[in-house]
Length: 289
Image (cartoon, rainbow, N blue to C red):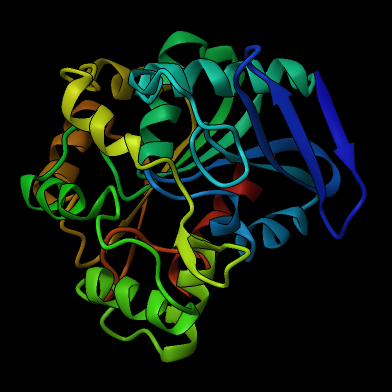
């Protein structure tokens, strides 16, 4: 079941189960094959609020998801459902609900993992794949840094300025050139404001429990290898601590034909509106039309 509302973008919702509805944004663009954007581990549809309109300008509808437990999508009381194969199934059900036979997948971090798994299970549904700063193997330094902050143990921030300072403290290593205004935009996308005026992280803190308790992640090398016959663009942050140059070379050995772009002086993960990333995406989309 899909429900749309009128706005600058249109909101949509997909009922996954009696308990879980996931929600997102639809940017109308045209008749070319649609794109679906999937954010990272603790992120939501707002991460694509600058990129999605740019992609829509290329003549295609863009659908941006907040996965279960993020943004205004429902939290799952069975938190062990916060697992990559569950997200894969949610995204494929979303395509069904939107009556999309296939789409170009654009996935950041966890969204890229979800893209690989979707292609492995249903390659006919993935017209092309844009994978942002993640591979079938993850560098331990990046895993350690991400694990250190997931769960938001500091409690609410008193205002947006404090939220931005917290975001900067965690992510300055990845965005050394970011301005004060950019940190505030980052905070608005990552936090939400309560009626009290305080700001809290906009995801279910039980995602942190799921990371610890859900057991080993699926082997992603077969999923990545499945992309050999799917047009693929890999984007890496030049100083990423999650996707190392060594992992990229291992990926080339398995799938030598993917397109590649690197964003200098950006870590995990590029916003995809950087000139190097946006130009690569625009050229790639033109090549598959």
